[in-house]
Amino acid sequence: MTSAHAPERAGEPRPRVCPEPGNAFEVRPARRADLDQVIAIDATVTGIEKRKYWASVYRRYGAGESAERHFLVARANARVVGFVIGEVRDWEFGSPPCGWVFAIDVDPQARLGGVGTQLLQAISARFRSAGVTKLRTMLARDNTLILSFFRSQGLMAGPLMSLEMDLD
Ligand SMILES: CC(C)(COP(=O)(O)OP(=O)(O)OC[C@H]1O[C@@H](n2cnc3c(N)ncnc32)[C@H](O)[C@@H]1OP(=O)(O)O)[C@@H](O)C(=O)NCCC(=O)NCCS
Image (tube, rainbow, N blue to C red; front, side, top):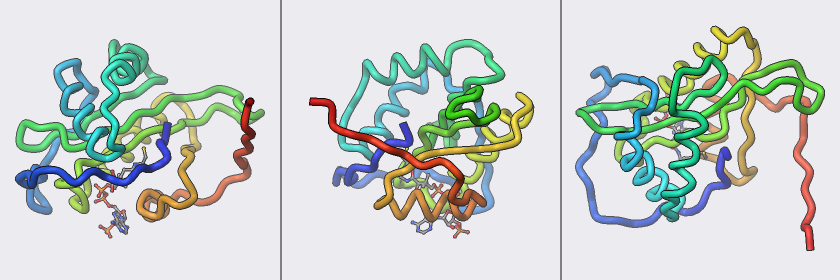
């Protein structure tokens, strides 16, 4: 679900929710009470509000402790300002277990303050604790923003490629 990126919707101006650079924010596992804010951030970024989808993601990745599945939120000033979701996948595509990040989003009002970096570091630490040594993700080729972000974090092109076709 490192979702192909749709244009962000123009909305009412909102106050900046990120602390000034250098100020603290926390990263912790998502709670059900965070979901409305997660849904709002996703809707801002993708232009689509997907309540049923997010309820199902929360059931699979958020509820309960798991060493393999993670749904983390970053919070600043008592608000969710970003989230990351991923899981350890075993032997897919013939590859040894690795940590897949399939969604990362930061509230547009909170970007460029290190939130994305902290989220990726937090999920990476959990993957390491689960015993994996490789992080993977997938992104739309034309999404230069997320590409710049992942490159800044040290991700590079890997040995896998994606293929697809239309099913009529
Ligand atoms: C990509 C994203 C997660 C980055 O979050 P962020 O909190 O702004 O990231 P950080 O502040 O930690 O930035 C880390 C680095 O990423 C790179 N980066 C982030 N935003 C960038 C931008 N707009 N232009 C170029 N590079 C950028 C920079 O190298 C930056 O380091 P620097 O601040 O020292 O220059 C955020 O912009 C986002 O949610 N984008 C849209 C959502 C999306 O496309 N998600 C993927 C689909 S699930």
